Length: 308
Image (cartoon, rainbow, N blue to C red; front, side, top):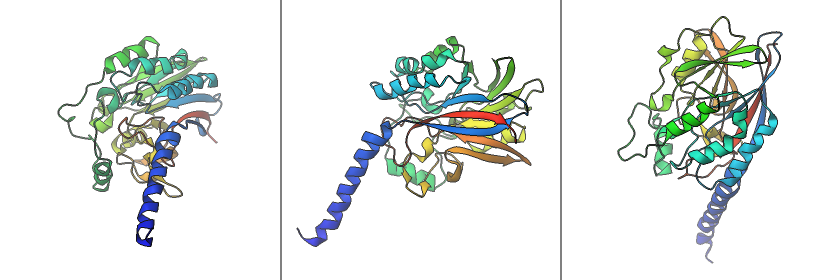
């Protein structure tokens, strides 16, 4: 073989091997991350919060379903679901089956754009170019003509019947061993369904602990929660960048959050106040781009402890 052909063929082979790894192994290599957050008032006992996000369920994903069911063995104090449960309009029964054991625990949820609308086949290069140009998916734009409407009402009814709190632009309360936890949620900013004015005013004075919950961590939502005095915000949506460069990190966040905070625990500051921010990298992918690289699928067990 002539030398001039060896490099292109080697690159093609490496690319093919990388794609097999990203789709066949890493996208199904589910992980549990454990994070400790010093955010509770002094004297309050630790709270164990399981965050699940971006499941993007597609029919037949048995390994993902088994893994999600197994998380009930952690016995969290409560569960927060930060949205994008679906990637298939037929996926609601499988989401309910996978989350069934977790719905035995107190919990709350918000929805993401993929709970409302099915994904559409798009050129992945276009996705990356949009991020370079500072555009962010559907934000501010109506769904495309012909988009599939997912049966989100069935998803809502299933969560509600299990006793999980629907935090769609509203507040809710959980009682955990006599402690009152106030959760304030927003509908998805990615498709401009967030209505912070409906929940503005900051934490209630009679709650033992408060937290903000939103699917997509757009800065306007993080600014509002933080300026209002919420000590912590949970979000998902970013997939941790999904396709990352080893030792460098994410290229995109699919919103206006910077890539340094694309996943994991960080802080956010607005109007002189600072909140903890936790962004889950999620455990699924859009069904048309079922790959992850240097960013395995995850759920997170957050242990909230007293402030230092």
